[in-house]
Amino acid sequence: IVPAWCMIAALAALISAGQAELPMAVLAGNLHPILEASYGLLMGLGMFSSSLAATSAVVGQLAVRHGGERFPTRRVTTLLLAAAWLLSLLGFGNLVGIIYPIFGYAGIPFLICLVINWIKERKKLPSQ
Image 1 (tube, rainbow, N blue to C red):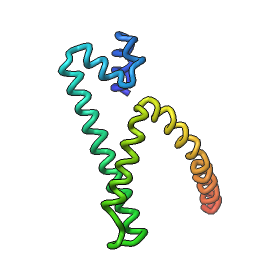
Image 2 (cartoon, helix red, strand yellow; image 1 turned 135 degrees about the horizontal axis):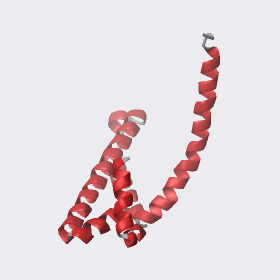
Image 3 (cartoon, rainbow, N blue to C red; image 1 turned 60 degrees about the vertical axis):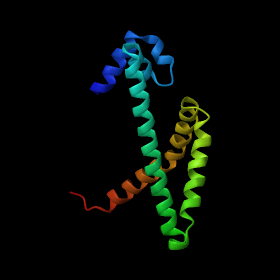
């Protein structure tokens, strides 16, 4: 909660930063250009390491489920990273505006299934 309030307070001080794709980078740049560059570098490294970890996990699971040792790990990794790079050209704001709602709506049936399963399991328990 504290970081959220800090961000709200900072955005209230510099309202124009709220219109940027990365408002915190604008706020850091308002303090000093080196802070903006540092923030951008750290964000880039964070996104790179996150995407690399996710890609490795997906390729590892695909290899386990489909082919084991014969699975074309390098080729699939290259294809996934190329697809991710192409999607990144759309821009962060556009991707978030498209992907979040898709996954949000796709998650609704899973939430419904979780609730239904919880209700069924709750009925199986002996009453206390």
